[in-house]
Image (cartoon, rainbow, N blue to C red; front, side):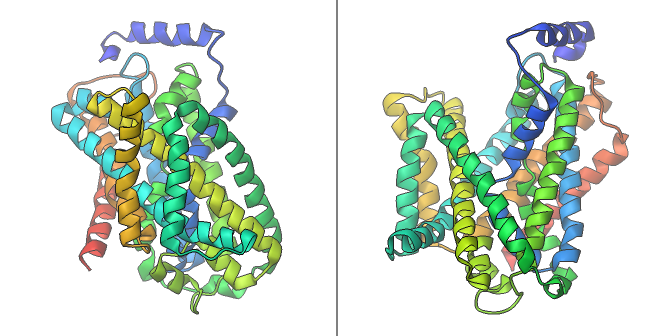
Length: 418
């Protein structure tokens, strides 16, 4: 570990701060964190949390936010043990040995695949609705998923630069659609719908909430962006996660205040059929403008998340398999990354919530919960490694985070067994 010589770490940080070629602002870091969280997971949130009701689900949302923010800060502390930019797999290998490396590697792999399965499954309904609304074309959901994967999979194949440019345009559309949707829908909220109360479902929404607050994979990039100043990284994480929490609360208030719990297109029915929140919102209001904004929001959210996760998975596979992601190997990597999720989604079009639950309840909790707490425990209390940033709470906070991780995994395993 680089921190065995603390002065060397301080010299590295000083060099990075003085380098004029390395821009960085806390506000920019806040946007990086919130942007990595806010995406297609939002389409599931109000439906998954709506089973318990708005006020009971606030408990689960705050728990998930606190848990993921804490483990993110733990990773910031751990990153201070190393020189330069380092990913979570490398952290696990150095801290926990070969076992930690393979657990991290497999968790990453399953997480990416699970998320892509969810996005492809949701894309079928969204693509079909848009084509019907705009062009009057009626196509089955499976064909919508096929078109979606083929079109945007081609952009992923083209590489990082096209994905980056296309993603910037989509993010503007996502923000505009969200603002328009909230502006039109907020006056339609019925406070009585927010009184639905079924607390027994509170913890069943935790897996989706956990993965929706996932930003830990951008911490190495965030640290580099903020010139290695881990305290500024902490501020960016706190600000970005709070911004995400505010967006999720407003979004849940809007959907659960408009969409009834029961009925053909209600929250319960939408959950059972694997339909995302904007579909239920359209069915509840039949507003032309709301339909436009909701469909646009769903489209932009799915595409931005699909492009980001798809590109990340191809790079992850290239690194793990020691393959250069160019030319003919790029076609192979794109095929391996996208075809399995497509086949899963075609086999079960209602897999949207199931895949997100598995991603959050198993993969993300192991990767962003259990591994960071284990690394911090071993690094702090066994190897006595120090960092220029230290998360408060000591052993108690690590034990609580590990216990919460085990609880979320247990919830998901019970759901899978039922």
